[in-house]
Image (tube, rainbow over all chains, first blue to last red; front, side):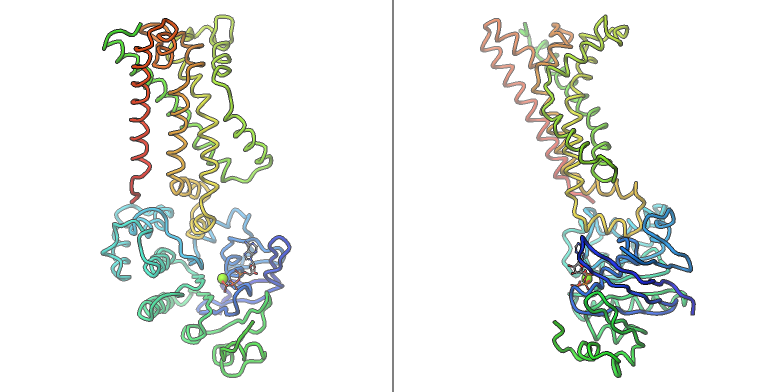
Length: 245
Length: 217
Ligand SMILES: Nc1ncnc2c1ncn2[C@@H]1O[C@H](COP(=O)(O)OP(=O)(O)OP(=O)(O)O)[C@@H](O)[C@H]1O
Ligand SMILES: [Mg+2]
């Protein structure tokens, strides 16, 4: 399968603090790639670098066959083709409908089409009744659903999801997981990268999984191998839910 | 002397007009300027910010003096003949509004949480779309900037007096009228004008406050 996104020896330091050490891996089109690891291991850092929100201190990023850096003129176009859900769900100070429509508005869609798409999407997410309230008044879980929809409504060719279903009740977790699966079914050339601390979610959703530990990629394996027969002792400990600190 | 109801109305309206126009012009310049300074990365940014904040203390009478010189007969723009007109007053007052509005805008947009800025970027906004969105998130601060700008000029007397000249029926505003009445010993009149000034200021602030609290949808 064709490579959707690849990191080549990517490192990241924040004011001298090392968050990521020489990560290299490629994610193919059609894959749901999982990144798991303990808190502070560097999972969000990887995802933020993939979305060009953070520039690597060292190393390169390849997207759709082309090297791209945050400062490139192309960066904006590349980012527009990616849907990213950040770890912290943030809504804008405007109505639920306008939060969702924001992604389409900035892409220059016309008002009528935005209204149609937003309406349909809100119904799907069970937020239609709240479309006219200011999104800041939503509950945490409702916000999370809204943020997910806002990142996916423009049908990007790649999704980067950072703990996209954390803190949700089981019904809403499966609602969003089903949406991801549907997103993948709609087009075989799409790609999803999921950061999660939830082993069960990784097991349910991912085709391949990477374990990151203290800024280093410890192991990358297909789902079955990752869970049943991992190479690294840390992976074995992690998937069995042993203390990892 | 401001002795009739009509004159009082004229003086009050002129005060509102001059301060209002200066606030609008000053904000139209200061808000975009502050947003750019606050959100764009460029060399010397720290120095520009410091300069802006320092200009908060710019003395009104000095702004009056500069504008007076520019538009005086000997000055470079003397031919325009606008000295001692409300236009000259508006220009002098605008210079007092700009640093305040710029500075408060800088602070407001910088204070918008990084997670909001990241989210906007991640959703695919272009740099200019990001700036506009962040400005909207900073709405409360931006209205505050206008309030403080208006508060400064409605209460100001030095520049208004210098470039306006306190001409009866032409450039007399509430503050300069109060000064005149006080000097002439008409304390009660001066006090009444003071109450009008206070009421006008309070009303404008109330309006801006409502605008500030308006729910965003
Ligand atoms: N902007 C920043 N400035 C300084 N240090 C940072 C910054 N962002 C992350 N770090 C540090 O980099 C390391 C990796 O952070 P990262 O957010 O990638 O971890 P994570 O694996 O996503 O953790 P979690 O599961 O808790 O979300 C951490 O030690 C963190 O404190
Ligand atoms: Mg994280």
